[in-house]
Image 1 (cartoon, rainbow, N blue to C red):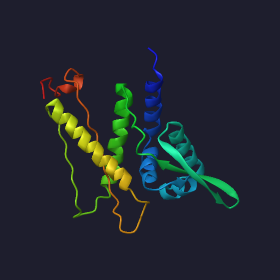
Image 2: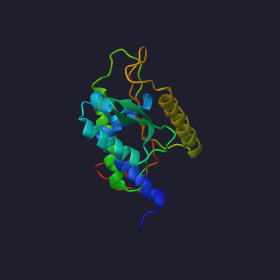
Image 3: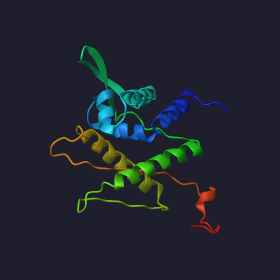
Image 4: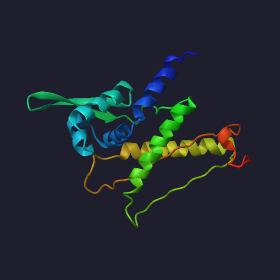
Length: 187
């Protein structure tokens, strides 16, 4: 079975994002364009390592070139995350599981920085809902996340708060092996 161009592009995009450093880069590049050297300093990477990961994200269409600047007689490309680029999805269960594990690991890393007594929200649900309600919820969450991405400011901007927003919403297959509890009964 061969993949079509669209499926192949989604797999390339997913694989590019399926690395903890690249997930952090995407977050960092949402607020402002940055050079590889700036990304390296912010994330504690070597310049070569930051450049490599940025090239992978660029090749996958997850970041765009956002200009160049002259630095010490040379040119430095600036990169930015484009919120209007569709996110990667995976039809392959193994790719999807790997990506969700990376997101979970990133959420755990971020959770160690929760500011006490700050306004926050978290929820978890495994539910059965009407398809129209599901569609409306997906649209609302997509709108909210797009709004947050577009409102992002450069890192450490005065007056801005450092936030974490992680969302994974999907329809579950009742026939999958994991749709039952450990003892084999329905959830």
